Length: 534
Image 1: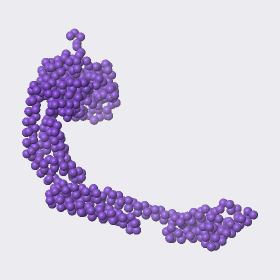
Image 2: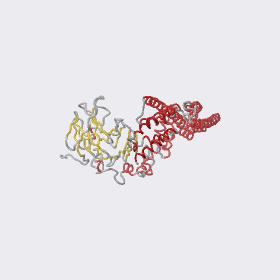
Image 3: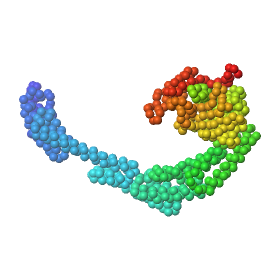
Image 4: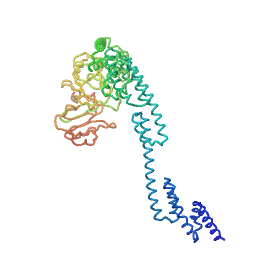
């Protein structure tokens, strides 16, 4: 019964093959249930010839995947002849080439589309030439390109018309819209050279004539031109200085305004308004300084005082700066920033202050004084305030800086300060560090023979160089002192571009440590310290 069923299936497959129904015959020929029937081998032999013939027809028609499927059927029947294997190699080669052509087609299209998205309109046309003509997407890209080119050209024509009317702002606006919305073309790039010349001429004229609102506005709108022409960046610097001068004037910052106008004058532009402004601000600042130096200046609250060369916080009445100027209100200092005494063998003693506010006064006076000077001055005579990278002197008693009467002043490297009868020098010796130093003469050393105060910001450089905050008299070692996680640490710097810096080592309290040929000792500093025999 079962054998008769198998026989009928094979006979049906033979009939299907005779009728040209190759796939029906193939399904029977690979049926695992028919294994062992002798007539099955004959069926497979008969099926091999039409499968190979059909595979050849598929290959000749370029239907390589269909050809490969018939060749795989021959392999499943174990009837793959040398001719079939040769045809398989040919089909595989053609499939590889076909896939390569398809990949090149996709790459060409993606290149053209990417350039169109990036606004590189002139190069899109070249990229489109590499896309096959039978690719429907090519026509869509070409249509979008033509539309954007037309609109870009229309905007450039409007820009040219505006430029003829000397309306540089409108010309810049049309040109920028053409480039940003539609893309860069030969027209937009050639017009840019004309626009740069007109842009520069307008800025020079408006600056000299004092039309600073238009000057600043045009510079702000010209970012794309600045990116194309590096020589235009000088106008951005000018605009920033003009804006800063306006803010200084609004904040009644006459000292800062005077410095800003001097920088504007140094760029070489001859402008009558600039000369007049410098004279006016000099007169205003002088009058203001005179008033603040008078008896009235001692009773004017800081928040009501126009700041001369002080940070904007002073004008706002910021608590930190108010404390710095008059010692009123709460203490803005942190307990963790206590002053430390640093002893450097053969060099002397230094006090390290990490606070942004350092109070200076007469030794033996107020307990809140950080720098007690044994000289004839008020018990709380002045404050040093750190604001960012800058240091300011706020004087409560008679004070001069470089021989000029001073109440509030921005300090610079080398400034000579006189507080009452005490004389000291402000130094910022290194551009690589925001730390500053106050040095004293022999007559005005602080308790424990301290001859300098280091206003420690980030690092303290120790070594024989003039750029060091603490200069050593012997040895060649160069050290970097800093604070990390509340711990003072030191590392050796390489000399003359030599080896890499050594790993930092902690500087323990109370013990003497050697770093290269320098010996350091760190102790707590008590401003109320008195020698035992006193």
